[in-house]
Length: 146
Image 1 (cartoon, rainbow, N blue to C red):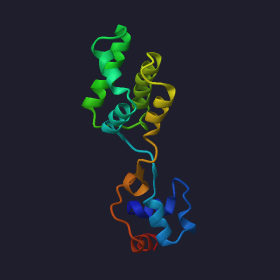
Image 2 (image 1 turned 135 degrees about the vertical axis):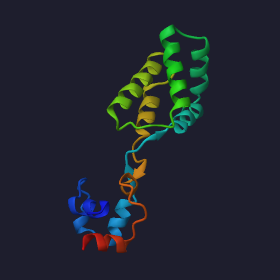
Image 3 (image 1 turned 90 degrees about the vertical axis):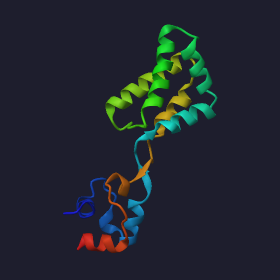
């Protein structure tokens, strides 16, 4: 059974494929509403545009307590050395949340910034991307249903 056939037959996310036309299934599969990895560059860009990145860099270099400097260095190194962060992975989420909590505790970011960064993982990809389906057309859906 192909991944598309399996998705349509089992409907694991209860999207309601059975009541959809073939074209509606394609639209559903290509709606960007699935969680996915957050590119590190997006986090850096957010922090830079929010005016927080320079403070984090300065604090890592000289200001603050050893704990605060360590938290800043951890964030800087993580953003420099990882391509993305899969916030659906509980281990990654725990570490990222702890790092952001340390920045909040040091008043380098606030809860709104933390929430915005953690929300970056939502709506990152389509269901078709998540399943590595490639290009799906209504004819593919009809064949998979047959």
